[in-house]
Amino acid sequence: MTRPSSVLCPSCGTLVGVRDAQCLTCGRRYPGMFGFAHLLRSLGDDMGFTTIVMFACGALFLATLAASGQGVGTSGILSFLSPSIPSLLRFGASGAAPVFAYGRWWTVLSAAWLHGGILHILFNMMAVRNIAPAVAHLYGPGRTVIIYTVASVTGFLLSSAVSAAAILGYLPGFLGGAGITLGASASIMGLVGALWYYGRRGGSSFISQQAKGIVISIAVMGFILPGIDNWAHLGGLAGGYGISVLLDPLRPERGDHVLLAMGCLAASLAAVVASVLLPLGG
Image 1 (cartoon, one colour):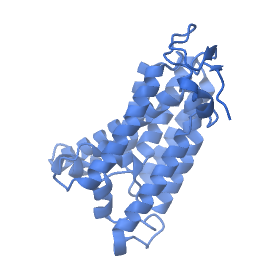
Image 2 (cartoon, one colour):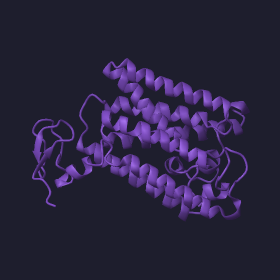
Image 3 (tube, helix red, strand yellow):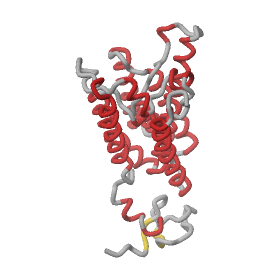
Image 4 (cartoon, one colour):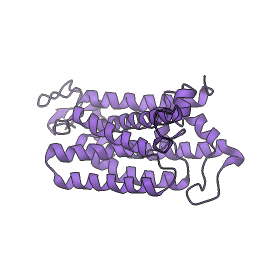
């Protein structure tokens, strides 16, 4: 099968050559992606990002279960098939203890790819499958990855900082974040924040109301169900909304957004590898 000689620019839809250095209409660099744009677009608006998240999270969940040995949790609905704490720390769980006590600052990236139980990962992956393609349709796949990654950093950094402040006595204990935290929900809240901003920026009250409804539902669940890291959700929401302001969804996605997205994925992979290879405190 031969590759096409021309494709539509991912940013503005103008017909461009697969090896053109720049789109003459919108200025995007290498809009044809050297002939691979058509193949990538066949993966959907998100160019396969949703599949990457689901596959990576599933693989790491199985890896943490395998590393747990006899320590896998089997009692209770919420803790059924939950990896052990040492296993989660080994693969990059975040929180006040890993970030501040052990100096594993990179876990604010790796924690978004780990999950603490079968229900935890199932609910999060269903949310990713529903929300990520919608954000990619509005922002483009590159900016979606950036939003997802930034929300992970802001969510887990806020949770870790608040937890450390509570431990040191600067905040009441009931306001403290999580000593150990993980899961894709901080990044998912970042995607919701992106939808919320798009609704305001583009004047779509329907999208804004949908985003607000998701936020309210997750907030209610956070106060009802045990073990929910509300600070990570809040930080992820703020990070996703804030970076969306800078990215401006009403402007076309640029080639450097895609390059930055690739860097975000590489940094997340490096964070997981560093967590596995480096001992606690190392």
